[in-house]
Image (cartoon, rainbow, N blue to C red):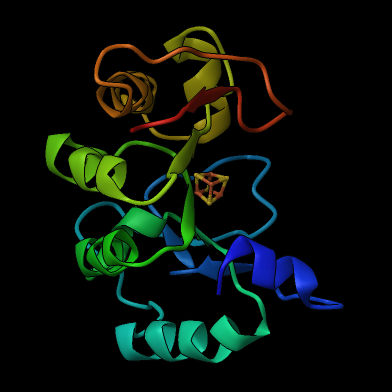
Amino acid sequence: MSDQECAAQPHPLSTLYFYLTPECNLACRHCWISPKYKNAGVAGEYLPLDLFLSIIEQAAPLGLTTVKLTGGEPLLHPQFDEILEYMRKSDYRLTIETNGTLINGENAALIASCNRSFVSVSLDGIDPETHEWVRGVPGCFDASCRAVEVLGGGRAETAGDHECDAAQCRPG
Ligand code: SF4
């Protein structure tokens, strides 16, 4: 459905939020989701890919224009790259909320190739001491800063947003 067709709907379902997994590799003090801690690797609990695709298919005629991927940490989903591949071939806008620690050159390039993609990487302090006190895992400050740089192809701009998402980057 085009943006014009969507606007013609009286009450379009424009955006879907997908909580791809209830697990996370950080342990933030403020987290309202209280995800199950997952040290590394992939999530054990996650939204099956076929269900993800089925939900989008059902939402399309209702006016869907934007898909938001969050969690837990969405990049722990074992089929995250396949989800990105689907998004790349679709016309939907893509938004990702991530702690950034699992961003690498490959998935950053895939994200950048998606339609009007937007990534929000959370930073809670200007140095490792403050950020990691909040986030509960040593080393995550550098990993998140690296993610912002990789996503921006080295040209990332940071800007104050709201309390949780202090660094943002628009790939592509
Ligand atoms: S990174 Fe996000 S989902 Fe994970 S514990 Fe922190 S606030 Fe919660």
